[in-house]
Amino acid sequence: MAGGIGSRFWPMSRTAHPKQFIDILGTGRTLLQSTFDRFAPICPKENILVVTNEAYKSLVLEQMPELKPENLLCEPARKNTAPCIAYAAYKIYSWNKKANMVVAPSDHLIAKEDTFVKAIKSCFRKSKTEDCLITLGIRPTRPDTGYGYIQFIESPVKEKDDRIKKVKTFTEKPDHEMAKFFLQSGDFLWNAGIFIWSAKSIVKAYQKQLPDMAAAFSSVKYNTSKEEDGIKMAYAACKNISVDYGILEKADNVYVRSSLIGWSDLGTYGSLYNHTGKDDKDNAIVGKNVMMYDSRNCIVNISKDKLVVVEGLQDYIVVESDNIILICKKQDEQRIRDFVNDVKLKKGEKFI
Image 1 (spheres, helix red, strand yellow):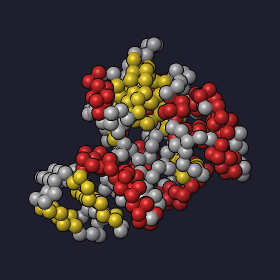
Image 2 (cartoon, rainbow, N blue to C red; image 1 turned 90 degrees about the vertical axis):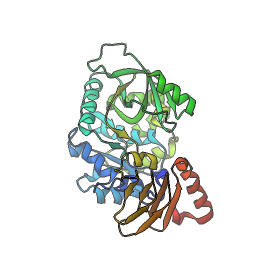
Image 3 (spheres, rainbow, N blue to C red; image 1 turned 180 degrees about the vertical axis):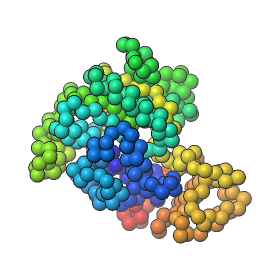
Image 4 (spheres, one colour; image 1 turned 30 degrees about the vertical axis):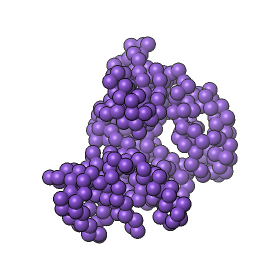
């Protein structure tokens, strides 16, 4: 899934060039390219599909020349993850009724890729023989209010992989006190937004939980000249809803696998700070020409052709991108979306 805007990473992430197309970590590969690389040991490259907004078609093809053109699925509108996944699921189902699928965001960090591959393959062993929907869960390390939480119970059947549990409840972005309770209870995991199931199982789930959406996508003439027009009609007919809310929270065959994969959704500058190397004053710096004086615990991200001098800051975000500079306290990073809305209202779309 590569169609998001990534507004919490503004101004690095802009509407015309969102974070999945950026080398945020300074590795030489964008987040989208890194995600593609990560799946090479899991399935053949010709079986990897990318779903994105039609505005990003050329960006995807530019960054992924090995992607088959028919494997690039362009959404005519942003309507959350349920339509996005439905498009891919029904397309795959039209190719192979026995296919297994893994659904993953294109803008996440997974540090332990070998462990990730083992986790996915373990889930595949279950999904190919059972009618089930599986999500990867991450053991929480702090009472984070920005993540969804999954409460689990023991599976009613003996699992070959004892890390696979039955899902009891989903909770989306709890308040701080609730997040503390989840952390202390020990039977909650972060929802990584990575899903494993058979094409048959997820199509069945759409038919049961989102019948209107199922009808819209099942009527599309896939792999023909009529597919594009059919998808436009399907998106016009379906509602804006997440797969979590539309299907997973209502289904009774949902499982979660606890996975230690070094995961981060890289949703905020704070998460980027945690995954970037630090200098001797704990400043995380991306940029070749950054000079720091009497500054500590900052994250600074500057394009390589710019010189920036920072003096006397502690716990700040300093980001430069094209014609924009953002300077704000790390503790206030959740306000960045508010800044973006204000800029849009007062200064226009050109800065968004």
